[in-house]
Length: 364
Image (cartoon, rainbow, N blue to C red; front, top):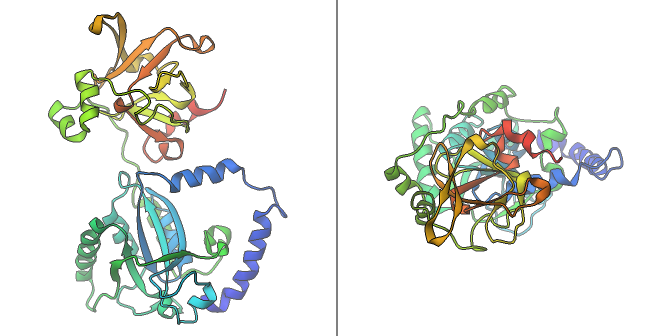
């Protein structure tokens, strides 16, 4: 079916190109592209590759799942280089239509992604899904991280018990992957009525498959738990009043929009719109989100009189506050250790439960 429609797809691709070039409407703001790239470059994200028949529908399906932070369609595990769509459908290259899925493991588990993927395919069918036939439509889960191999194979083995016929889903390492032509990317977003072998109701199911957790109650953690959860430096700073090195910490020169939370509890403390470059080598803020989130007390260690800043709920040592901050921002400088914080980029705030703080990022 998709082969019959490909000519129309090329025509639509030209139209989409024209539209995206601004011939029919204004270009999307550069900020949108930058934010999408930021999501795809998220260092916490992991990647897995799913071949599930026509990649148009498979990509759209995974885009609905909370915790999936980026997708890209392409051709995987073939025997040539830089194949075109026409070469792939000729059945001479060995490539499978595949979706690269980047996901945040803190939001969605790989096991859930595999379980949902199985709902979109007939795993017992050889080289056919829906109306599409050919070896480019074979099914497979391809991994790039050796640690994922056991998870993938165990989950497929477990799911195979639900079928009376043999499972034909490949579970092998990714050998190669080439991005497909631009008109294939986000195809069903650009062509809502376009061909898809996945039943529409499954897209709605995917949206609901990984709901946001209920509102979090922030609680102080036991030191034994923190000892296992935090790095040695994070523990030293937050629990033993340590100080990390200036200019050699994670967030001193972080400039992205987002929110900074207590590393021990996840409670919000500071936002990027209150961050400024002080030259001291540590993250500097003009104020916390609200004073109710912190405690300040006199610190006379090291022969100095300073005001220490601690998180109120977690009682974690954060840093110190000084009176040499920008006068137009109130004159204070909250000098905070990166090791006391976790940064949540703006693009992830909603999915990680910090959506209500997004208005604080509006530029004044």
